[in-house]
Length: 307
Image: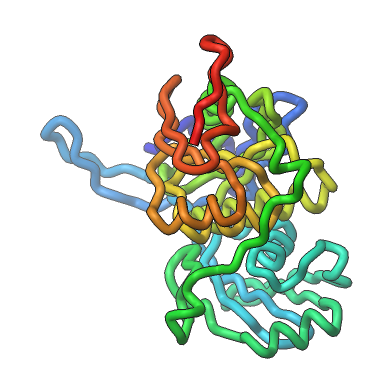
């Protein structure tokens, strides 16, 4: 049996699952191709049963710039325009979304190519540091040839974002709300999610993917395409917060990143370098602030945690 509610079938489309979401939340319905059904043998309470399991699809996605393939990522085959724009921004390939002049999605029997045309100056810079990223799901460092390439440079937050303040209850509320807005995870148990919330903890954008980096890239791409003001909001993720996740959030200009799981030492250093507030282990009303703790306050106590 599937992990969540069985999606209705259509003779033409196969799987179709359109969850009911609040009107204010921008989260696309699942595309049929993101899920497959496979036979499996399940052991539960000492009994073996033959079941049909819903499993997440994982496709090779090639990202191409001005005719040159730059990266091949394994990702959920949905929201690919968001993914390509977000990846281009968070990897420092472009500084603004309008530096991507054209984007085309090309499908083949081998996978999907997202072909982009970027500004000539950006393409020249890209050619100087080309690398292959083919490898594990959402792997951010595969193909790095030198140790000094392993750490992504991050800019300092813009002053308006650096002044953002958040109540601890808003952070906890955003993470809690995200759990109910992951239809692909509900069906497969195999995906991550990333969401954007305002300073009150109200979610407005959600994206899912088999890769945690990919989910965040998709979210950032969606925010860029919508021209969303993110300077007073936060990104919440269902994974740990590593250096790459913090660097991507910082490059997008997000003032706070909140993770369900833990953080790494390099993630903390990167967050402090960028001036980004980093929160981990958000469970219920509990959380831990690892960087820029003066940004998080507790309204019940009328206090602000100090660095």
